[in-house]
Length: 362
Ligand SMILES: Nc1ncnc2c1ncn2[C@@H]1O[C@H](COP(=O)(O)OP(=O)(O)OP(=O)(O)O)[C@@H](O)[C@H]1O
Ligand SMILES: [Mg+2]
Image (cartoon, rainbow, N blue to C red; front, side, top):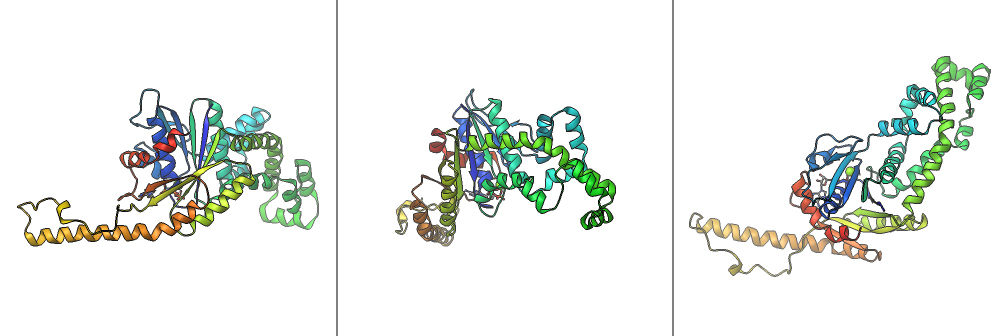
């Protein structure tokens, strides 16, 4: 059975980094893994050491046993929409008609929620392909983690009768023709603003989408079923920031309400805590190399001592936030703050080491 892992979290917490690192950890365990990333900054392609990623899986050179492999891809929203139209339009002629419609071309890349909806669609395609043991989904930047889960519902709503009614828009082509001919205020204003041909094209778009909509909503239900099934695990990526536990709480409640399984929290960028607060013993330092003067050597020793005390204070300062997260009663995995950005496969593999325990459970 293919397993699905969805990494959610608010903007900038490390969703792309941790989903990539977890996919490395899984491939190193000998699994066939696909990671679908949504990274407008294209940082993932850099960190995976591969060229620009597209909708087609690209193999990442991880050091994995023979059975393991890692394929990465970046969501190409337009290509995914086009694929959906080609697969689900009632006929190839109908598909061609939608694809060349200007409003389709606009709507497919700019509608609110379209990104998230297409991510779900692509996730489902990878899941259905049977080519992978695990499919991981990185999620787009959003201010709050829960926004991602609400998005598919939002896009469904866009084509809803109620919205069309609210816009006073007819729901099919005949209606639009009537609108075109009619003398209602809205029709004459529209015609004056955008021209007769444009109205016809909008009409065609909604008309064509009607034919697709049944297929899309059935697909939406399948995705919802998958997300709520045992095959799927949600991970909330967060940091020890004070606001994180409130978000973790909201996310947990929303998932529970939707019947979706939260595997746990990935707490990223945790400060490493020195074992104890005591001053470093002089005996722990190596002997002064003869090339370093006594003054320089004492400055180095003092610097190391201070850095350690500083690190201890940083780690202590985050304790209350970590304790608050622990009170949520869900499993947690901590990833330390690395000394540098995670922008190459070596650094990702370092992060992956902290996720081996989690990987063994997926
Ligand atoms: N544990 C870590 N140690 C050091 N740097 C980290 C760590 N985790 C992430 N980073 C760095 O933080 C930055 C943001 O990480 P990332 O892009 O994964 O976040 P994101 O949640 O996907 O962001 P967005 O919401 O914009 O998609 C990157 O530059 C990454 O290298
Ligand atoms: Mg990201």
